[in-house]
Amino acid sequence: SAVISQKPSRDICQRGTSLTIQCQVDSQVTMMFWYRQQPGQSLTLIATANQGSEATYESGFVIDKFPISRPNLTFSTLTVSNMSPEDSSIYLCSAARDSYEQFFGPGTRLTVL
Amino acid sequence: AQSVTQLDSQVPVFEEAPVELRCNYSSSVSVYLFWYVQYPNQGLQLLLKYLSGSTLVKGINGFEAEFNKSQTSFHLRKPSVHISDTAEYFCAASSSGGSYIPTFGRGTSLIVHP
Figure 1 (spheres, each protein chain N blue to C red):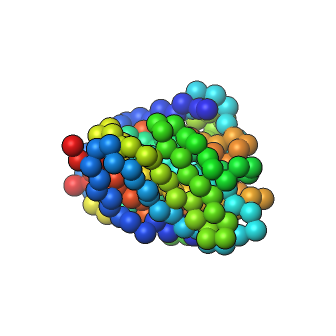
Figure 2 (spheres, rainbow over the protein chains, first blue to last red):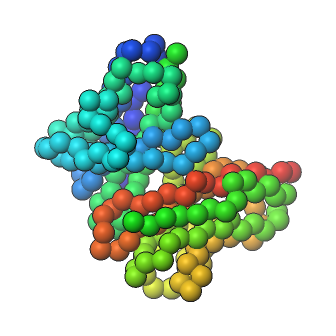
């Protein structure tokens, strides 16, 4: 298994500002992902964070809005840029090794005013 | 890509009663299936997974699920629920030979009443 921590756990931000969320895994993993979970809804994959290269974004998500870094095999960041109230959501980091099983962080609860 | 359907958005049940949470996936040659639980204000935790082998999979906290290929289902069951089982449950599926990325269902809210 893998233990994943996220910072911050929650934040309240003003529209137009940016927030960077950090994700730390306690051991090396093959893949890391960022999801968004809007209130009462399922998980939507934002992007796959690739170590040493640009992230792979899903349809509807762009790098200018959600820049992602992954400098090594245990750490990644997601920035939510130029925020609006529609960005209010839970942002989840996850990681996977070889078994198709994903391990999830506790999430970052973002409220944009 | 897989699609996952959780037919019930909410399942209320009394404590110590049995429960079944339904999940259907789109047909595929070979599929990996998962159930995750999300307790209030927490991330997702893996309950159980089916990769291959026995179609009856046992997980943590007394949960089990059965893979039914002919009905493309992977329903989650527990014979006697506890108040602490109140949570959101997500079914997920990915195609073997594909990426690591599963498709998640919309979730089922299990509400256990005393």
